[in-house]
Length: 125
Image 1 (cartoon, rainbow, N blue to C red):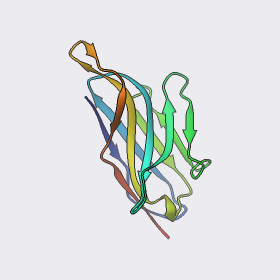
Image 2 (cartoon, rainbow, N blue to C red):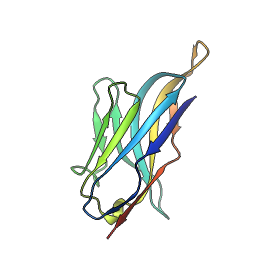
Image 3 (cartoon, rainbow, N blue to C red):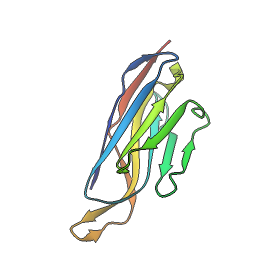
Image 4 (cartoon, rainbow, N blue to C red):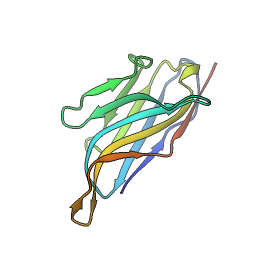
């Protein structure tokens, strides 16, 4: 199993900045991709950003391009989301996602998506 724990969500003023973190742990064989999604009240969960292992390619939703930056630590098990110029419409529960292969004993489990429980970001206007 792969466990993801997000942190860093809080109340911030419009135009402010916030940095979210997500730490992966457990029986990890390989993490192929990590990313962030968000879900506002009454809306579907939507993609925010992702970073792919190897080339560390990044991808962003149009709504956050130029304002949010995704990165990872050297161990590649913690992903960050730097959020600048925050807007009220950025308010949501932010979920960490990882596509990873886990170990069960000596067996590598085929890659699948794992999710954290989310961290709340509130932006005051």
